[in-house]
Length: 280
Image (tube, rainbow, N blue to C red; front, side):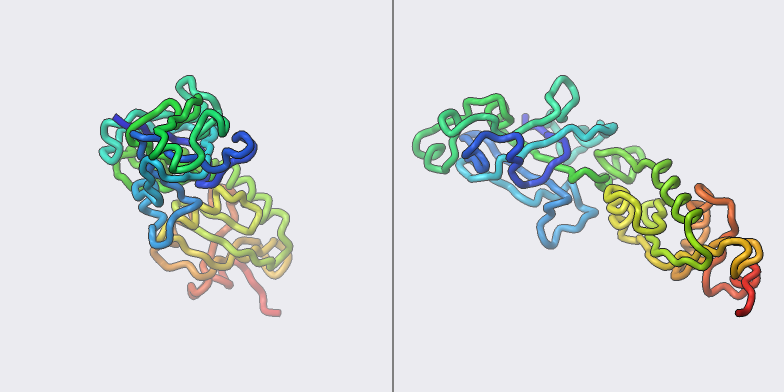
């Protein structure tokens, strides 16, 4: 039986949680490390295939960065460990199930743990530490999320499209959108992206939510124009450009989460007239 380790991290060493001289370590005998990371995805691996396509596989004696997983601070999806892709493997989650908030591959020193292939292959040196390589053997699936939501593509997550790190904070997204449009001047234009049922207006959203929206292969981007009442428009509202007809109703629903102003899509015959836009 192997293990699936879940947390936030990358494929790089974390100096804050490793001893001096332990930025790179060697895998001991009996261990195989399979790494999955959306942040460090290998070229040619589509985002929709994460976390099911390893971007790095290492066997005994191979050198690896002394990576660290951190507690996600969000609800985990039990379906990850239960997936047929990880059949028979036990889930180990940073900050959950009695584990510490940080899980390093190696917590030892050059005196206790191998830092070269020769120490493993010629001297049979093992990891004498309480890090992952000192405690676990067999297949170790290192699933390192970069702190934003990864898309779920296995089809077993009860309809959750966002993956092992939980869904977006929609109230935060709505609040940012609301502040953006309320503080805008008349006819101010903002870029927007709409993906994974998440609408982001302007550039004030955090990286996590940007990655959720852009991670959708069918995401769309365009222009979002705010018309304040009493300016160019009699009643105020929004004109949204570059939205295909089939995406207009879902996008309108997303706007209604943070504003009750009327929404018209550029290119419709009566868009400007319906919002009372006057000729200059």
